[in-house]
Length: 182
Image (cartoon, rainbow, N blue to C red; front, side, top):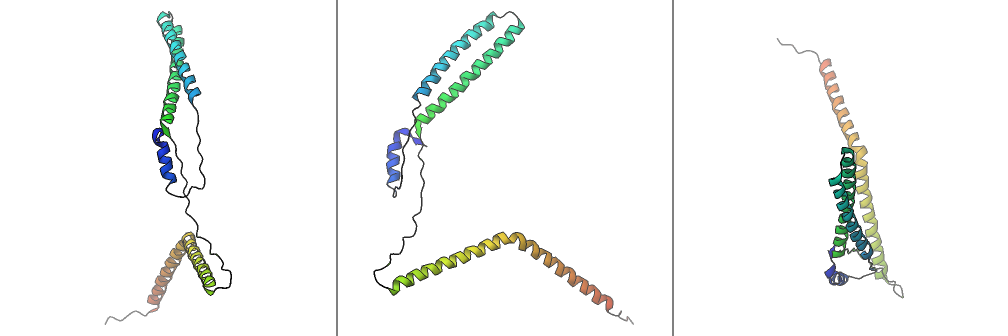
């Protein structure tokens, strides 16, 4: 959101930062809605004044309650329209500038007219780097997503090994003859 007065300057400054592949400017004229809301508010305020007069002239409690309910309805409508009017004023004072940035891809290697060893070596090297990068990414994915399986499995194996070692130690102690203490 930028102040509407500076939109043109900011727009041009942003365009100068890089290559613009597509731009689209649009606007929405809210004059009619704004004027309509102002008229509705004036009419509702007049209606509110009449309802207040009726409130002063009411004779029964039932009439008072009914008139108060109507007054609340009118007041609510006025506040809703005033809120929308404030929103439109804010929208007119500011413009929205949406920017999508894209990183340029690697430029393709242009094939030479004849056979060149350097061209093929460079292409092979880049393919090897891409393949190695793919293998590293795959290993990272396997380690991270596989951890859901292998971490609990390692814990279970470790606990089983400790249990088995204790059990072997207890059996070994049980099979040893008691030592003489004489």
